[in-house]
Image (cartoon, rainbow, N blue to C red; front, side, top):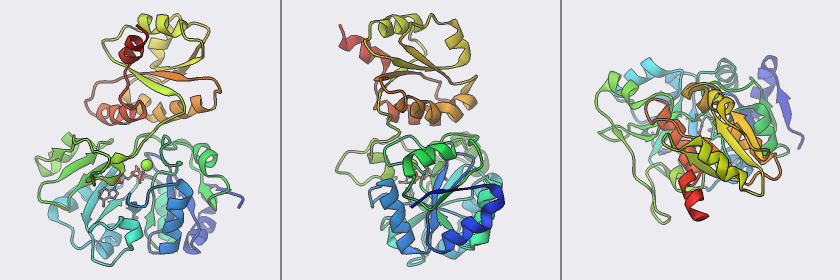
Length: 344
Ligand code: TXA
Ligand code: MG
């Protein structure tokens, strides 16, 4: 199959493909998603195949109205309605109890809940309205790889496997939505994102943050948590705020292969980069860094010999919590000091 790139004036064509059961990747403000008609079980199954995604990892259902949620949720609690009013369209995914039988097990992974998201993307909201059905949408990457923040990233991973990609340029936020479970009495954040705990608490009062690490044989609350995530080919090392960048440069110089260096522009500018250093700028500040993180990790997959990537850490406040959550996973928890001590 030849994968088509749809421009914003071709939404009708993309919507027709979705209605016909085809897969069409779509932009959002966070990352690109892999779209299929959520009410078409065959189409949804093909989403798992195209990504190579484990079948027990449920999908987010993207909607273009609260009325669409009402069709599939058992009920919408008041607090959830308040959050929708405040943050939709936007980067907050809300998990609610499902109206039994309203969506196939393929969408929910057999859970009694569904995750709903109203993305802040004009073309994608038009696409959903035009298709007339809600759209499942995991991130449009091969399972295990960093999420795509451009149509080119999607094309790289999924060309020939999907019908098309609706291109709206690079995404703004760069890390996936906050996932908030509201199916229980006490709401809990299962995945941090751009809508922070403090943002949510300013509307509905105290909520929890899930810090639990999931073991291999355990069924996690957010099923995606147990799988390998955001992993480029090279080993990623986190450079913590207390680490000395000149020590990083000395280590780097001793390596026999090229090393990627991901840091803010002002840090890169101040470094004496050895000839085997491949710089990638994270811009200036946590907003830029979050928007560029996955692009950087993917960039080094195309640089043949890069076997390690050192990446700047940020404080875990605000959006920094989401950034560090993704960076930690892509590094498998490895810090620069681990690389150093291993060589001693
Ligand atoms: O920003 C985003 O959320 C992007 C864009 C495309 O909208 N989508 C995205 O989807 O990141 P995905 O499938 O890559 O991540 C969704 C996460 C997974 O970890 C999944 O396990 C969890 O949400 N999830 C989905 N439904 C759930 C449910 N009913 N209960 C608990 N976790 C759920
Ligand atoms: Mg994903």
